[in-house]
Picture: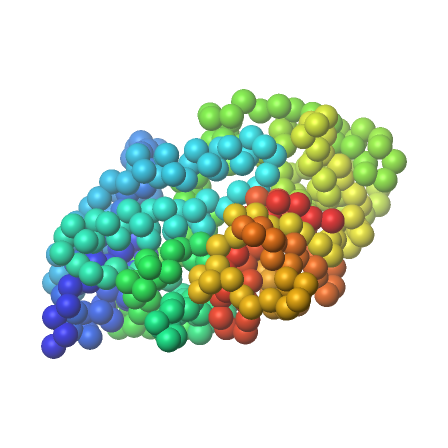
Length: 360
């Protein structure tokens, strides 16, 4: 028997349930820890925290392991949500899940694990890690449809070195099959989607609690004509089609530009309008997992870059400039959005990434 103590993050979903089960099977001393990262009224219909906690505790009871709850709501507000609001106010489209992983799940959670006498933590992420000559590598999960390395690119290598991803080499189908066999109540639970603290609430109504909306004009990028009124820059993202309320003849309208200077949103018609595509992007706050990649005489290297979670990584040339970089794509990319993460890959290896500052 292994006997090493590991603190497993229990979200109340099927992935964390099976991850904890696999660790128990391998002989680890496992303690399940449920993180509450948002203070909410449990009586509200959108709230799932109470049910998630009950599901997590049920799985731990079945596994015969200790179950604990920790409240990181203050830390989440200060380290994640404030930044989310700041980015929204600036008219950008932030990705709070990346920041949550760096600041909460692989920092605050790791500190709590240390206080509980454990040297390592485990999560249900679909990703893999590898030690290479003393350095730490982050690899894509074997199930490419569920791979979550994109959301982990900003985690400190020291935290990755003390993390375990039991599901990294598995498919989602295999995970659900194990959960069914173990009769976990989470075996057919729907995967969570969207921003965790918003849940099933209306996004606009939720965000309006914290940032006053500033309506403005929808304008045609091609001729400047006013097409209607938008509810506020923060409610829209590049490439968006639905929820614009713009009808009329011809192809559908899409968000092409968000202009903070005059509070307008420029629209174009057609999914493949040239204005929706970019060949270059700037990336700020770049974090390299194993150190900056080797560059040529011009300070550049070639890799593939992924500018949204569900986007296929595209071939590019990256010019490194201190803590930032410039990305030159081999082919135009659609809806490269400021505020989102640009993550770099060399095959299965995740090199790191940063925040998209602009694209053209």
